[in-house]
Image (cartoon, rainbow, N blue to C red; front, side):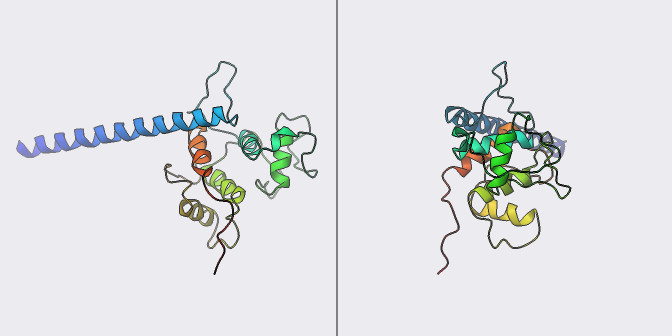
Length: 191
């Protein structure tokens, strides 16, 4: 009987801890999203909802990073021409994708597609942030571990539970981007 009570109490403590961690993560998402909104990086849907629980597409993420880097202010000078078979010039995010691809932040697939409507994964989003921050030279290991290890090393994934192939949510993108903002650009010089 006593052992059963201990097991129940232990279970309740674990459940309470998990609920607190989830509540803390939700609060971190909301706080990070609020910063992104104030900076003009994240915009809500027509009803004003930020949709932090929703997955984010590759086109949406390209738009956020181009805003973050300040390249959205001159849409007529959007970099070199790109040739993704599945992205027309009429696509709403064409300029952002074009600029992001021109700068080497985002890459397409081997079949020369971009897949703008595909949800972006944690690994892809982290890799893009590593490229933006210029920590992508001399990465050791195989994709995606090489980028994820570097992202962890520079501290941009410290507040995320990374599942590499899982689609990342708008809330977790907010955390990733906000955690990237204070990181110095470029690899430190080797002595």
